[in-house]
Amino acid sequence: MRDKENADDYRYFPEPDLVAINLSEEYIENIKNNLPELPESRKKRYLEEYNLSEKDANIITSSKYLSDLFEQATKICNNPKAVNNWIISDISRILNETEMDPVEIPFDSKQLAKLVILIDKGTISSSIAKKVLVEMFEHPRDPEDIIDEKGWIQISDEGAIKEIVLKILEENPKSIEDYKAGKDRALGFLVGQAMKQTKGKANPKMLNEMFLEELKK
Image (cartoon, rainbow, N blue to C red; front, side):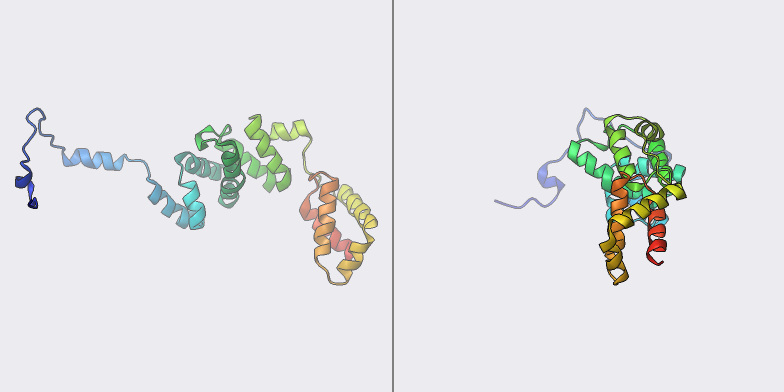
């Protein structure tokens, strides 16, 4: 037995039926310039441009479809953090539960961006938005159409919110005592009761502010 050390030892010889292929530098450069952005390059850009965490950037760039969905939706709603959160949390969860591939997502970037905009405008709460997303997966249509059909528009009328707050306070005198005794969690409980009573439709920011206002009296 002996070691083979170089090509001669292996008796390599040119394949007679294959012609030599010579690629010009111009052709090679053209190919390089027209390559799509590769995952590692995209990930680096997301870390710098959108300030995503490395973990989130890894998840989004694991699929070209998710990357495109993220970028296109972000351009429309100008809220990369929210779009990122929806993709890595609820959308990824539903994909895993249904064993769907990202390319099978039944809505486009415009509809995802619109969902984010509706939350930012206060038209719906985040909890209602989660229900809207499920509908977008199960019965694909525009988020606004879903909200109108289901009657899920957020309650942001000051008078209506105050009425809810006073009712919850009347029903929970112990929570009032707890809050005044320094138990801040009591406020969260009261807000939670109000959200439960309105089926998640009350504006949570307004609820917090109004509960605090009443509790400080």
